[in-house]
Length: 239
Image (tube, rainbow, N blue to C red; front, side, top):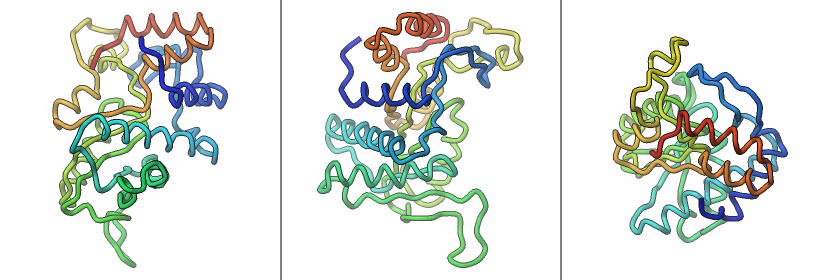
């Protein structure tokens, strides 16, 4: 593995000290037992939301620098977790590069359509005729992302990218696992890989499981690293 950039190492260290990243035995929705858990819901104070929104901004800016001609007009955060993420990340993008990102807007949807005042489903920038990136915390099965894609299309926007906090780099659970019968051994890709293939747009992440392993290894946490590596050997995928 290559050496992590300082901003990723610093973020991993902060997540560990704030219990956003924790180790133990965690039962996932897939019925898998994970040795680690990344709780994005804990990015709930000034220091932590500043850190994660700055990291999202770094990931988006890096992708733009490495892919000439790529950019976007609106950052869309699906309700509810995406709402603070889109607003704070837009501000961090403007601070990072005012010339490139200063005019980027943000928007989010309501869970229920408002029938009074300004009304409607959407809050923030109009998506009509705009290039849109979805920002969210994690992608498990891709269901929420697909709902967001439907909203963007209905509002006249064009999806050009997706960014999430963590890519667990693991294959989607089989029906057998969902039923508590264990992995059936079939070859499957990740939710991120499936959405990338369906949409044809880049799906970026602030951190991957590989990043977490590298960052924790640098801290000398041998036991935790071994358990994460074993989990990856069992469930990991490259997409």
